[in-house]
Length: 401
Image 1 (tube, helix red, strand yellow):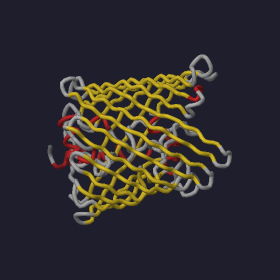
Image 2: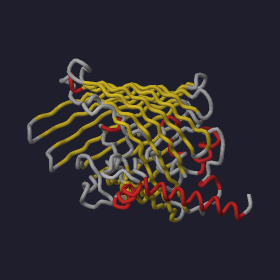
Image 3: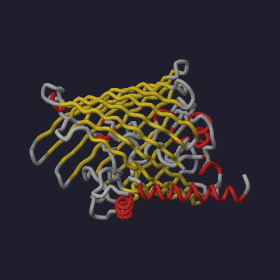
Image 4: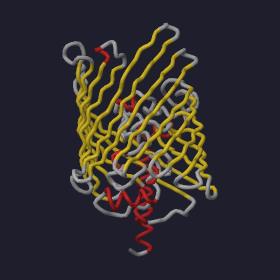
């Protein structure tokens, strides 16, 4: 390709992505735990700069996205049209979604098509051990007051936010690290899909990133993370960094042992206290991962017990949340998954239970490109007896820088 043509393509891609980012709604930067072991990668931090995975891809992760996960292409930034200097990392995630959502209400089935995510990731290395990391996106608005293009542009201009920004000391890819700032404390199977119960009800839902002092150790066959966290300002306080969820202060711990480069067992704990609301949330859980090479199947499972206290009401309750899924890789570029989820807010009251059945297909036709189809059937309470059901169909188009 001639230099002039390369510049034209580069300019066109940059302009297109900038325009799309302006129209889009942000989702949370997360990870694909389905690719641990299945892609030949033993630990999540091989593909991501974050020591617990997720967010900006390393050069290794970009190579894997093209050579192992997708059907082909160049996984480098902007498809290799321009290489940033070695001290600078740039990336991004952009998604568009179409959905049909039936929750059984009088208004009938909801149909929507909307920009879902626009996140830009930046990382600047300060010498060999220190780095500054940040994510800038647009706060998600699925149903804006004005859904026109002009209305979305106006809303996006007022809803720019940073959900992750931190300083990190990490001398090498393995070994000790420390970081301070805003991000999700290492905990749980942090799927891209935030609707999964193990994300929604464990302190890892949309915009629930906390301010943390976190450290740990990452080795080839094991890793451990410890985090002390504090809440972010609520919406309306400082819009650029505001968050949602309980205003909790607390601690999260996560430890993972990997066996024979095909399986992992993890234990986790989280304690969060909201002094202003006189509430506490105490979680203890475990995670299992198993890759069966001959069958091309990856099992992922998580279960957490949740104890909540409400001092003002002199009341407490025990809950449970879980996920069990089988991920099948029939051929390069294709992922098919089935999963069962359960969440029960109060184990002594059966009508607080929710069960969900998921079917998902991911297609990676070319590096940087993904098509996702998701079908979800959810039963609330005892279904037709004293609860209800909901059905969700979703198609996503995903592009990453």
